[in-house]
Image 1 (cartoon, helix red, strand yellow):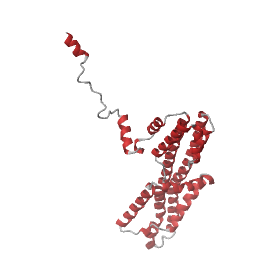
Image 2 (spheres, one colour; image 1 turned 120 degrees about the horizontal axis):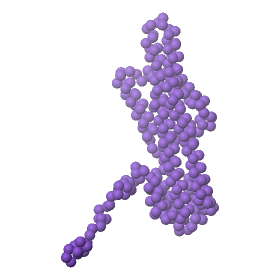
Image 3 (tube, rainbow, N blue to C red; image 1 turned 90 degrees about the horizontal axis):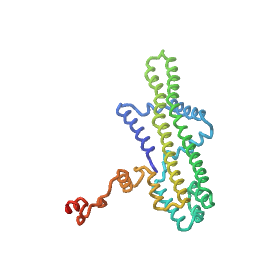
Image 4 (cartoon, rainbow, N blue to C red; image 1 turned 135 degrees about the vertical axis):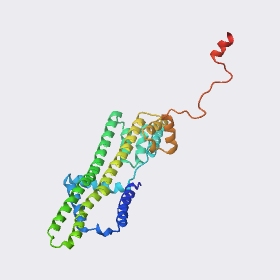
Length: 289
């Protein structure tokens, strides 16, 4: 579980409470039911109106995942694929049918079953790429829904403020109440901005990031199983897949080794030196002269 969203939102609202406290105000002054109902209710309503019912259902189903943030490390995926490659090398591709029964991931299970069934490599690549593209569209749809809520919320808050100010203008005959009423009117705008920047936009960005991570994982699996089908050697397959992973996603030791290799560094002790017992051609020619 990656708690980045929970930590970020808690710190954001904590900063707000700290500011209110330092200003010697009361938190209850912004916790007003009427503007909050308008901002949250109307924002979600217009978000639903901007798409389809299925889009809204998909987005709300994806919402818990934004807070859990469960991801699988790339190294774990690579080790799994390398293990499959070793099984195929020892027992043949038909053994992957039994291997598929022990896999919980439907994407990988389907790919292994297709290999065991003798599906052509090009056809299998097209099939897996289509599955990945469909998964990516679903992730973008959920992210877009909450991002759109972040666009609607400030405007809805302004609507609430205008409605409240209209009520203020109706009571100009009681000047002693104008100050509290005007302050209350701007609470709707406050919640519009808060909900957009503290909730909707971060959740939308989080879902987009999680979708990108999932697509990267599926791409690793696709390239791995296609290499297994082609008979790739397990060790070389592992190195190839690690080359597809950014340095920050690799274990510390592997990241350093990869960075050193990319920079063209040669480890100490690997540099070849000329033997002291042998003379160069120039020295031989000098002695002959």
